[in-house]
Image (cartoon, rainbow, N blue to C red; front, side):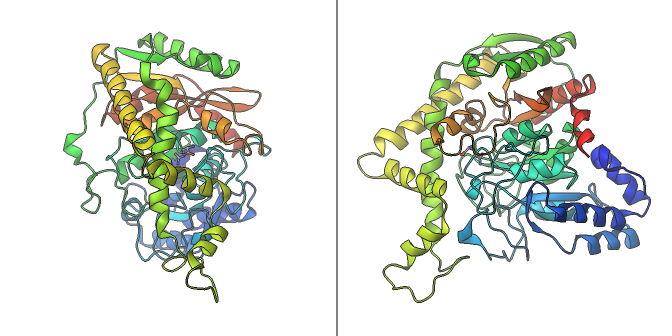
Length: 473
Ligand code: GLN
């Protein structure tokens, strides 16, 4: 059997064409079970059988036979879905999320549910009840989060491409830390039906692959209007980009706090784009310095409300012989981890009478100002994209920041503004330092994913950073 594992979707297609889907899937499942990076929470045992059917009956679909991993906060019919939380252990959804349904309709094989920060709250995948995922480039380091399992699985060849979710960077951060491509679409581009909510007004389902092409093919398959999510948008409203690009804006704000080698590679990438005919100009968005505070207040407030439904009665963890007046608090005390509790407490505080106007409402006003900043920059300066480092640092050591939430939150400085505005954004690898990957982020205009994806493709075709990930396989 040839090693087609290195070439992403294009490579794996050879197995399907040669009638070797079953054998290739079996190998992949065996690899997942070795559990080197703790990338998965659940393995889908029926994957090999599905592959056998494909070898027998062929069939069609744009992802026919592709082994795809799905983050564990996306509902999968008949397969345990835990959000990496003890409180949801044992919960088996009776239905598929729309995105999962669309993958299956297109012939994909779901190979497993990936590890993540508990309820997607984190930047490193260390808050998972099931233990941290490790970074395939250096096992002593974090893979990024919260979709760390989905990214590590792609980078280590434990799937061909994957789904993650991005509320404040959770697709882009792990994509950057694992040296792969990740896309966070415009809010409304992809249905959220069946995504277990953390912060509804911020979160999107996104895609990851070893190349931007793979990530964008997956996005194409899962996007579009869904009658079960009223915030999803009709594809006729998407913008169509031209093939020619004029100018990008470089968000030079906060560069003082960015690690030197990260900055060096990001600038190299910008100059590479310049050589390819895309000019740049430096930009500064005045309200961006309030983005982190505004994001964390909104995200925690929505989380505190969303997580009220976990009471041990309807889902997952249950108590035995508990008194009627203490059941909820006992189950919640036992079922939620430390970071989730911290956020429920802070969110409840900022929504409470007397503080609502001071915190939550103010955060919403700031959010509006940030939206206007971005709109103004795109319009007045006629930009095709705005670029920044995806993360200000290289992947941290496991345990390095987990006890210091503020410094952890600070590392989301470039990713959270994008969720506040709802704009699309991709992260692609732009270099390596000390053997660790570095990512650059391209932010686009609303519903113009095509432009940033095309710029990313041009960059990818003219550099070889993307190919490095196959060295791990
Ligand atoms: N790191 C951010 C947070 O902790 C983003 C998480 C996410 O996008 N789900 O909220």
